[in-house]
Image (cartoon, rainbow, N blue to C red; front, side, top):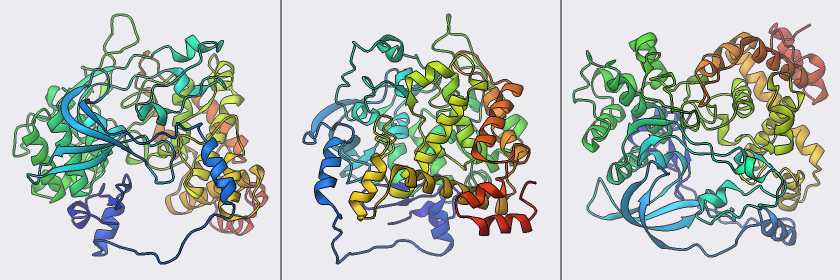
Length: 515
């Protein structure tokens, strides 16, 4: 595990990278290592890890997600990107996985691509946000069925990412409405460019910095702000041109090595930099280039030049900004999941539920107990996925809810029921809640005010949140969790129900226990 120069210079979004291309980013872990003068850790194990029940593990592996279990193909590719963002190039593709234990092999291993640093060809793993380095003309297309599924049609997104054709079942009575494409917003941040996309991704890899902040926040901010004249009086040392590889390389070099006033400022993170410059102008200025992909005539929709949501992060599956093509029930769910979390909870909580539940929710989401229960189910599953490291896209399996408990028992040999694992997830959420309250003063006012500005931006249908309706939904959520709806602090009974009397006692001493 190693950091790069971004971590050594304490850049706020510096990452730690493992030898198999997994990256710990989004929270500046690389800068934590850099602050301790720690460059790398290497380990060599001498033992063997053996599952308690090998036959059960094999049976689970063959069942989860109904995997194709095909060999990873190597094939020639001539483009990288999504529809509307296609960047034509030439490379060889192989398939690897997020985790060596995954049986889907969805990640994209790019082989024999040009390197910015050497004359040699290089291989690197890219997926998800990395694709937008190649082109950001439009957002991501989507369908309701990607988040709300039926038993007949719950094709795993990791299968789609693998290049294997999804095989939806047209006999499903909800087939047409589930699979109807939601056309993405037109954003026009930058045109497709294969070589520049490779450059952005390789620089982030080599510097050890989070691709999310660079690709989804920094570069769109520069693109939108330049088009709206926000930076006319600022000299970055080079004319802003996000279409230029030279400019991208220059800006990342300035930030990573904290060169000059603006390099040092942006190394402190986008949220801090924008507030130092002045948020009203450098964050809230409206970009007039966003156009709806779903409304007749593709009208312009207001979008601030900074794609900031709560807790110093940028939008993700929240109905505006990046990955905006989700319906109101889905972005309300994602917003409440973000509200009680920190940074990007959607790395494990991409909201999934049944399409039957969606039909119950869609007409009146603000008063829907079904939506509240769906949010809590996804949060609890997220706690499990963070704790027992099961796959984000294979879990939750909405028709096999004991899957994670069966995995745990097969691996460890310790009996674990679905109910016991769910209780452990609630306990984990509560312990994290205690840290947020004790260390950071979390309460209802702070949480609602953190997420509210983002959902006042129009979604692709031009819809925004309703203040009274949203706060009623928040009331229902807190009450269902066993938290006081005025303060958002858990009651003593809630702490003690999950064996956390000591935490309740400490909360009481701190004056953080509701009556």
